[in-house]
Image 1 (cartoon, rainbow, N blue to C red):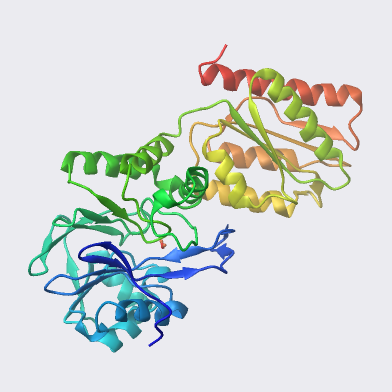
Image 2: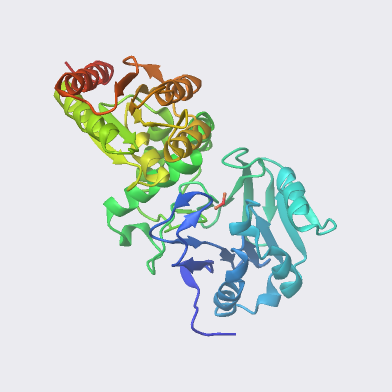
Length: 403
Ligand code: FEO
């Protein structure tokens, strides 16, 4: 087995044995420009335990890292906190390779693993709050259903005070550094926000409950070890508080203007609207969809109070890029946002109404009526655009507690 890949020591009895995916740029529709890691953890208890595995093509890297610490065949238990294939993809092959005494997952996890891999049973379901003795150490399971799959759970290793939080508090960030305190805070914050916005946003109510539950449990905690990105060993409250804040989705004075354009008219409208938004007191992010990925728009929207969407009409429809964005945002169910629709049209001009329907389905409050401009906006039309922006900007500032 290659000695190029070594485990990273986290505590005396916990090692990171995951894999670094420097190349991935699309994670089910999410642009992962900094790559990612698939984190697996080895617990050197009396019962040697592997917590999660990695995406299938990276099994060799994981096994090599395990072998740098212990002979893989000595693994007694595997705990699967989450069945999604970035963490379970090589589980069947790992079971074949190491022949563990037992594999544990939540009840939903056991079903999901069976539905994925058709193992013919063999996964032992564990209950919320159950503690598994590893001999000299103890692992307690806390179910986190729908954060973000029905099977999800986290595992707390009491003696080491480590929380294996699966996707929780994670981020897509490939790096040779294993600890969050070794990475610039602005990079961490951006990637953590992007992860939250694109994966967790629809489940924000559950995030709020989970953070409260962890607070009530008051577990002594030295480390949060997620399944993606770096491990937190200092200032753990920083990432927990960020998640708690994002889950609240409090209105801010930020506005996102996302649009596409055919011959430049809707782009011109967007620019005039942005001027108005700024004049009204908003912090504006203008995001042309020819240059901005849907997952980046959603990242900006996480901490914005308004979403303004523009599209020309093409064949009685909005532009496909705008439809793509709205389909994605609808699924993520943002709350507490204001909105408006706009666009240039030639003859029938349905796009603005269709955007508005989407915003309505999302319960995004109409801060201004949709604005349709025939062909190319003249000075009067651009003034209307600016006024629309000002109206939304002022409403945002009021909601955010401004003047
Ligand atoms: Fe990282 Fe939901 O899998």
